[in-house]
Length: 230
Image (tube, rainbow, N blue to C red; front, side):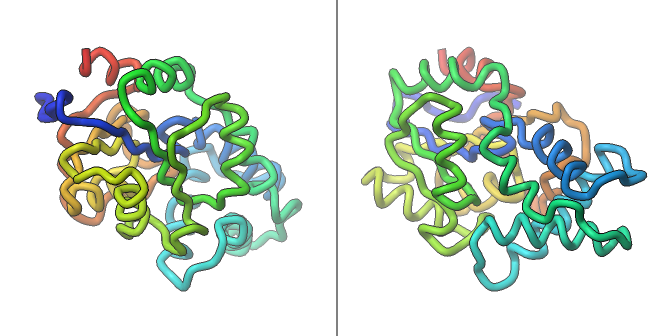
């Protein structure tokens, strides 16, 4: 896919966090196994169950993400016919989910040129542990509890634009999820960068897109994004 982002006009980058900057699949599998106990499912099957449950719950009335995580684990347990060992394992573990190896240095370098903004489907207090782990101070952080909405809704992006005080043409959104991020960001006129962390492998913890999602640029890492920007 050829690059279609005019970087000279971009003043800010908005980022999804979990799945893009943070290796949430490693964290999710670890904490689901802690929360569920012994289950006869491989990692990929657990991730698909997580994706389906999370998307279904987020599509309902707004509740804090901490509750979403508890309900996701509980729904998976019920579907498997078991009682959860630790119902809050996902929210307790979230702050220790690891960054991808290229995340911290890439963000540091990107921050020398662009304003950086997080747009995440978590609660602000849950993100605090991740922010400390990343060791970076973002220009803006937009979380679900602040806008009382979950992506793929557009409230995160609209709030980010308001805080950054920039037109859509000056913002590029960088994310792993086509469904949660690329589709709504494109709808609002933002340039989009798909960080394909799974490198084309289907499944995983992100629900497949329900409509065509064509990013302006596809990369497999933030390090590759730096190379593309030049």
